Length: 69
Image (cartoon, rainbow, N blue to C red; front, side, top):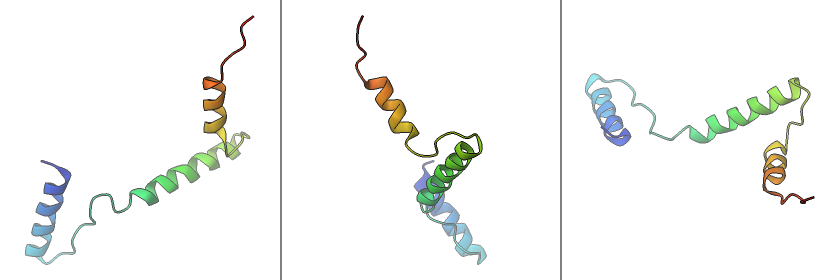
């Protein structure tokens, strides 16, 4: 059963029982991602690491061609 089918089934059951409908799938995704980002930044500060730019710095270090010799 897909997410959409489950949502429609839950919505139907809620209407039949007179309960509030569940939130639509993906409705809170942006808020969850924002909270995860903030939590990771907080943990970086607590561990005394840079809180921003870590991913870009790591990708640059991995993708930069290394000098041979």
